[in-house]
Length: 501
Image (cartoon, rainbow, N blue to C red; front, side, top):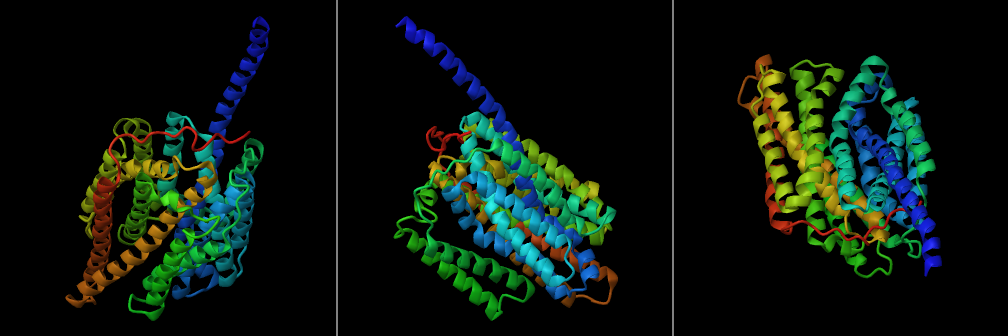
């Protein structure tokens, strides 16, 4: 017996030392994942501010301009589930590293573009590699942090980046376009990718939780074509109209393909998206919360960017700075919601509260006018919206990926990203269409030649979009309150084991 105690002492000490090292390494892994996620989220908005400069330089038409944004969204949304499953099957470290390198190469190609076609191809490639990188990053977070308190803190950081990255993209896009050139909104990814790649290479261990499974090829084809059709249909509605056969054709095809995908997942031996992931009540509610947040947030970023630049004559850089108070509020409440409120009162209180606060902020923002000032008519409203979204985003993402079996972590993470992307596409198309109709209706009842009438018509279009965004968030309040279970979710310690170092 004494001998056993002697030999156990060093072993226990070695285990404690290994655990301490792994714990320290975890926060460095979080930093690397955050950098990679920021790169992916930035690219949804950073190019938007640079589009007028790129258009002038490369000489493409207004009608073609939207494809610079849409090409990224289409590739990203349609390939996300495949990317998540590849991470599960072949290992998260190689998926992460290949995603980072591919994203950087596609960004460099876009920055060097000598024409419209080259730029669109580069943006589609960015979306494709982003679809590999984003779920690998989120699933690494899910499997690296197993302690409930640490995990909450990690997800509050990740969720804050996911929520605030769009606004940071507007700021960075404005600064780079003003100070350097539109091409640097793409070249900047190369510098970010170097940091993410070196950190990932050094810190991440490779572990395949679904190594014995096979890729579900029919499921991959069905879901990729279904998501592509859905996003394309909404994008087409934005540029043409809802009555266009292309719009309805793609939306119906998307719905049918996704229904066929759901049916196939019940029959497949190795399903791409095991339905057990969707059927948990809290997880299903979280996926819907992310979808609704994606749809409503575009009302803030898109139309407020127009308002600040076109009506208040803000420069691209000043526009980006104007969003920073919202980012600050979002980051503070992300920490508060994930680490303080969620462990005490649970999602049935936290997420509906966040949606209700965001609803109030969006409704308040509809008070903007032609002669409004940023400090009184925009700033307080942005802070309120940031507070609300900070309570929703990280907590919903944490619940959407928490408690899944380790072999499903990648595909659960991909589903979160897909919901955010599809929500954003739906929101952009719906809000753009509704805003355009509101402006047309206002002009038809007034003198369209008057400059003041034209300015007021743009205000009508923005406020209509803000009211609809408020409606999305109000629906989120009700849905979240009805769907989430009471109480604090129990952390399943065995669900997502720590990454093998």
